Image (tube, rainbow, N blue to C red):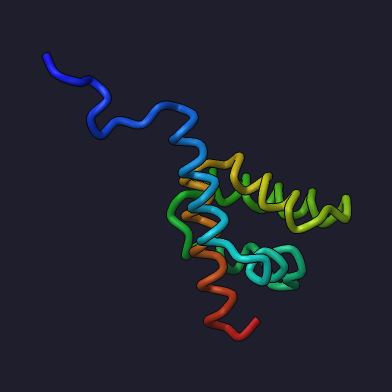
Amino acid sequence: MGDSSGGRHGMGDLSKSTAQQTNEALKDQELELLAETTADWDKMRPQIADQATYDALIREVQAATAQNESIAQLRGRIEALGTQGMAVAKKVLELLKSVGV
């Protein structure tokens, strides 16, 4: 049996990778757009496949906004939702940008 680490990531490496993807995928401007949007979240709902994660994203964005949290804190909230949360956040941003918000 050879080296068992070939191509595998440890948990620390995986979370660092996820955080790096978040930082690259969601820039501060995009996070500000999420935090400051006046768009109707319910109107976007039919276009989002993962309703549970969408609901979680809405809760996190609204909580961060209500508590006047920084963009870094909002980023942390979205990172805590994992890769599904990131995917849903990206989809919401695409929808917001497509309607010119």
